[in-house]
Image (cartoon, rainbow, N blue to C red; front, side, top):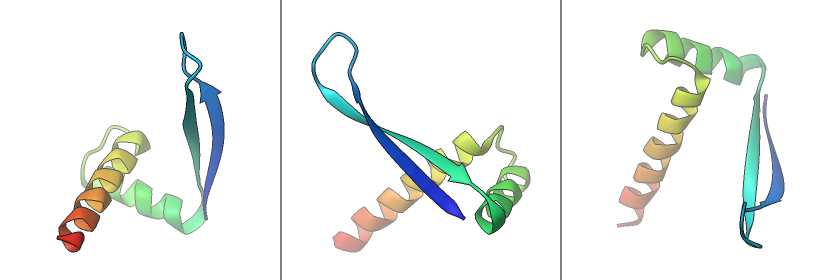
Length: 65
């Protein structure tokens, strides 16, 4: 299961609101993250998520061209 929680925060020193996301990994999606982390020698799941996000964004951009 993948659960994403979001909260709004005030950016320090300004009145600007920014969105914060918390990602909860469980079950099959946790197993997938763990497998990627081990096979690709990532330090932690933060690195896995970062690369998944960038690969997904790049894929979306390329598809829209």
